[in-house]
Amino acid sequence: MPLNLNPFPTREGKSTSVPYTKQQLQEFFKQHDKDGDKLLSKVELKKAFDDLQSRNPGFRAWRAMGKADADGDKHISQQEMEALLDYAVGIKYPFKA
Image (tube, rainbow, N blue to C red; front, side, top):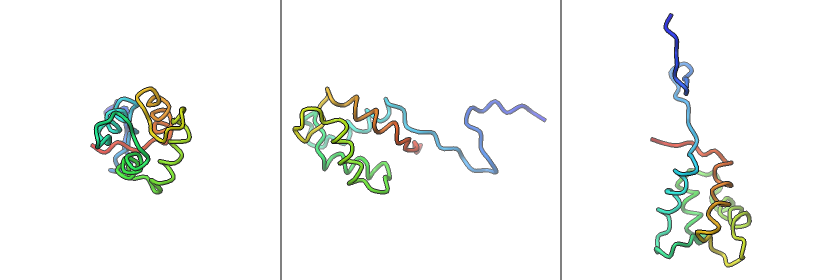
């Protein structure tokens, strides 16, 4: 019997999902800055979490603001992005290739 060295094994033909990396999420969130102001609004965050197939994107956007919006301006700036990424990585959204 051959040895399976696949780091993402499958069971009975089902593929194993791999969560987004921090770098992938950073690029993903940058793409959701629709007005190009280098800030993420709650509306942009809600759309991003919806596109990640969150069951409740409004809650995720609200929670992300609470975790990452350090200055309370209702936007996630480049300086606050790391906290947003830490929050989103912890949810372990599956990467869809």
